[in-house]
Amino acid sequence: MTSLPGGSDDADSAPERQPLVCAGCGATSDGPKPTWTCSVENGERRYFCDACSRQNLRAIEGRLDSAWW
Image 1: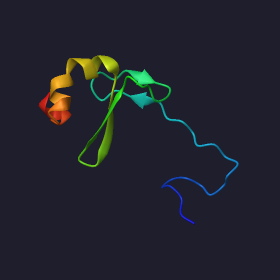
Image 2: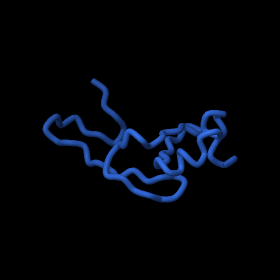
Image 3: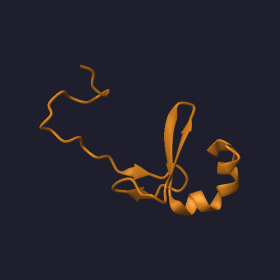
Image 4: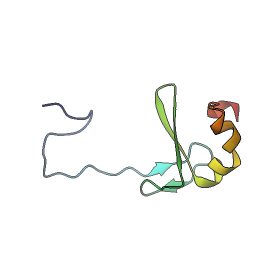
C-alpha cells in the first residue's frame, strides 16, 4: 500500500487543509475555488485568484510562466 507524501495510513484522520495563497497578489482561500487557476511551473503548483487570472489571461493561454507576466 502506498500513501501520499506527508500523509498517514490512518483512515480515520482527515487531512489538514492548508489555505490556498495566490502566487500573484497573496489573496487567500480556505479551499479550492472554481474561479482560481492552477499552474504547474518547474514542477511546483501555483494558484492564482480570479482577479490575477483575469488580468493575465492571454499570458496564461500562451502558457507563459508567471515570471513573464
